[in-house]
Length: 151
Image (cartoon, rainbow, N blue to C red; front, side):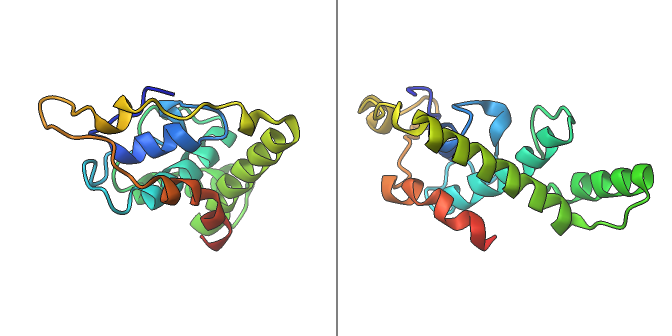
């Protein structure tokens, strides 16, 4: 997975952790893109949101930094179509359950053990023009799925 981006670190975390593999549609985020801290939480939130979006069959290439308007739109859409009274929390639960199902499938198939470690250049080679490197702590990245139940 040598495609981890340095200047969009939350997306790099997504590439490293997504149950469906390194995919920009699985949790792309530009929120504080070059900051080292907070990127695992940003990636997790984006993956939950986009897991829900994918489950609905809604095509979304990139999410905005503030997903609330889109979340509210989707809630209103589902409520109007099916005569329901769900809220954003109900909708995000779909994203969490989707990721949990994908992780469970991967564990049962040993897919989660198939990835090789990143090559060293991914973390040490600065990217022009900003000089950014992917420096998110690996231990924090490894803890991403332990945070899913507490969202």
